Image 1 (cartoon, rainbow, N blue to C red):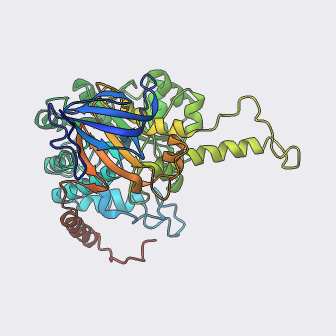
Image 2: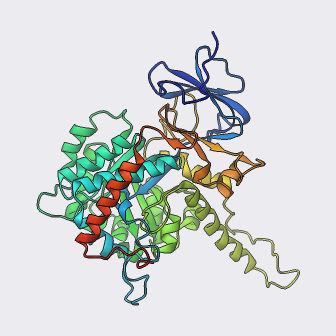
Image 3: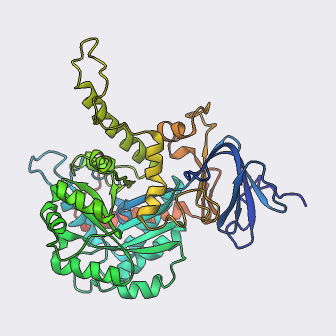
Length: 485
C-alpha cells in the first residue's frame, strides 16, 4: 500500500488511537542522548506517541508531514506562567515588582499594587477563562506545548473551575497550579484541592495535571496545610522565593528546619533570588528544583537570576516566562535572555582578571571561573529540564520512542535563518515565534503551516478585549495606549 501524504492539510485524525503518520526528512534534535541528533531523519507517530526515530522509515498507510528544511524538536516547557493576566499585557513594560517610592514610571504602576492587589480582585470567572485560554493559545502558537499555570486567582470555586476549563480547552499539556486567591468569603484555598482533584484530576494520564501552590509568605498556618494536602494527594508543590519581596527569613527557617515543613524533591521554587547559601545548600541536598524567569527577574528587580549559584552547586534550572504584563512569553526570548545574561557576567568576570592593556586585554580565565552557557545548555533548560521539574519527563521533554508526541517543527528555510549551519545555534540565536510552523501535542496537530487549528481567534480576541475593558473600568483606570509606558 502507498503512504497517504498530508500535502494540503495535516494527517487525518492525528492523535487518535491507531492513526499513524511520519514526520519525514527533517533535522531532528531529540534532546535525548540515547537517541541522538540526525541531520536528516524521520519520526513515526502512532496515536499519541512516538514509535520510531531514524532515517528512511517505511510505514504503510501512514500519513506524512514533509519536514524538509525544518528542525524537528520536542515542544518547549514553561514552568511558571500567570496565564490569567493576559488582558494586562505590556501594562507594566517599565514596572517594578513593588513600589520603590521613587515616584518614577517604574514605581507606578507596579506589580504588587496594580496586578495582585488591583486588577486580580476584579476578575470574574469569565475573565479567568478567556485570559487563560487566549494566553495559552498564544504560547501554543509559539511552540510551548507544556506549561505550569501559576494561577493566583482562586477567589471562589467558580474561578478555579474556569481556570482549569481554559487549560483543558487550550489542548496543550498543562500543570494547573492551585494557588491562593484574594481571601474573600467563599475562597477555599487550600482545602478545595480535594474537590478539584476528584472533579478534574481523578486520572493522571490526561493532558492537564495538578500542582499545589505552597507559598511560604502566606503564613505558617496556610502553607503547612497546603503542603500537607499536596503530599496527601501526591502533588508537586510550587512556591515563589523572592528576597526583594521579603521572603528570605522564612526560607532561612526552611533551611534550618524550623518552618514546620520539610523540603523535598517534590518542591519547585520559582526565582530563588536573594536567598542565603544555607538555603541553597538545603534545597540542593533535598533534591528540590528551581525555575528561573530571566527576563522578568532582570527587569522587575527581583534580583540577579541566580544561574551562577545553580551551576556552582551542580544544579540546573528550568525556564519560565512569569508575567506578560512586562515581557513576552515565548521560549526564544527565555533562552536568549538566559544565555546572554550569564555570558555577560562571566565574560566581564574574565575581562576583569586582566587590565584591558595588551596583552592583558584578553586574559586566560583563572581556575574556578564559571563556564559560559552554551546553546545546548539553554535548550536543555527549555525542554527536558522543564518536563523533569513538573514530574512529566516520563511523558514529554524529549523525542524518545515510547514518549508522547509533543513536537514542534521550526522553519529553517526562513529569511531570518537560512542557510542552516547549526541546528542548536539557529534555534537559540536566530529563531523567533515566526519560525514555529507546526505544533503537535500528544500526537494531535494543533498548529499547521503557521496557523492554529480549530480556534476562532477573532472571537476570542473580542472577548479578551471586553474582559480588559471591564478590568480597567473596575480599577478606575483610563485606557490610554500611550499612558502606561
